[in-house]
Image 1: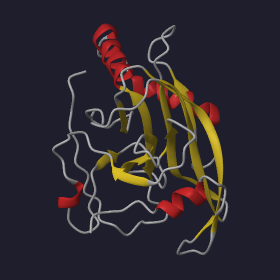
Image 2: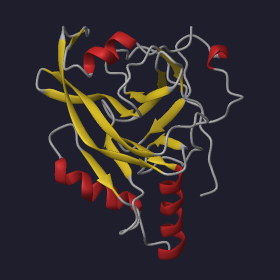
Image 3: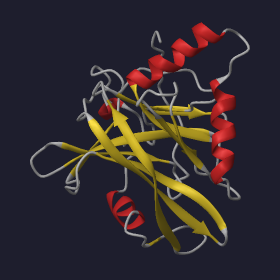
Image 4: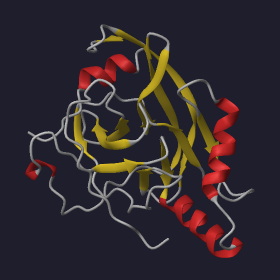
Length: 229
């Protein structure tokens, strides 16, 4: 069976609950880290520092400003971001599907423990609208080879740094509303899946990235695609 999001884990984590873990029950706390500005209805999740850019998810989402929260697991003082979530509405999720960047991708065809997700090589994940991704590409073209948006992210994340986790809400171009919300990725580098939640009427209501704090045994085989930014 492909990797599956544990719905109860997500619900408990974002309720500041207690979750089972090989080290014993783990408590979580929830922090709102910003509001994601969605202008194109297409969103991405990726490593924004050194990861290759990927296509936006094929699932469209509502335009607007949507709260982004992280659920932080306390592992005997070692605090790790277990889940990151965008809420498109306050309705609870009744079903979940693995987020894909191509409607032709079929998660049901994956092998045991496999998933479609993104790789992390700088200990950082993010959410952004596709318009924000294009603005980052514009800055690289305009500012030349010495510009690094990764350096901007690292500097901003230092402002909220606590041992093992941090986050930042960053605008690629000053004066524009488009933003990118970054956060530490669980135990750091690896590969991580995202899932869309749908409410009782079948309307998308959440996007969650699972940093696999509570399911670390599954095989990591993400599939990625690169857009023209």
